[in-house]
Amino acid sequence: MTSTRDAIFPADRHELYERHRYSPAIRANGFLFVSGQVGSRKDGSAEPDLAAQVRLAFTNLNAILAEAGSSFEDVVDTTIFIIDPDSKFETIWEVAAEYWGEAPYPTATVIGVTWLSGFDFEIKVIAKLPQ
Image (cartoon, rainbow, N blue to C red; front, top):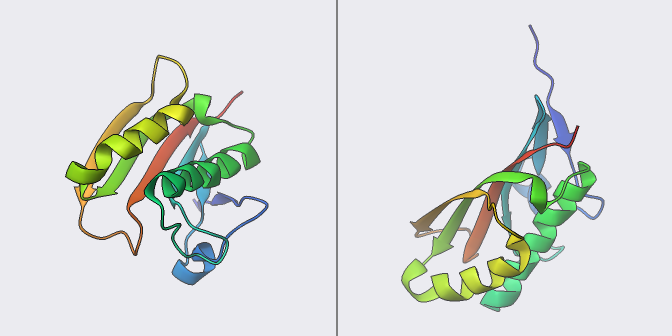
């Protein structure tokens, strides 16, 4: 049996997808598996201000969710990666709350990492697609 990947690309895709050879999201079995999204500008460079970088990551994430007919309200699981979480977590979590919506919230795993290719924040999600 051959598996077909149903890749989702946002309308205004940025250069990172081609540069690093990955799909922004794959739709499978009623779920959307979204690759880690960062606060990248159209040319793939990092937004330097931390709060603006987090907002841009959510903008990029929401564009992918919308392209699949979904929204952050459909997200059931999140994985968040942070460079130096001791100094950046509070700022990041304050901005993330602007996008998180109302309870019940998705599950969340937050991981401190040492490298994100020039970024300070990355968010990866799984969303249940609307029927």
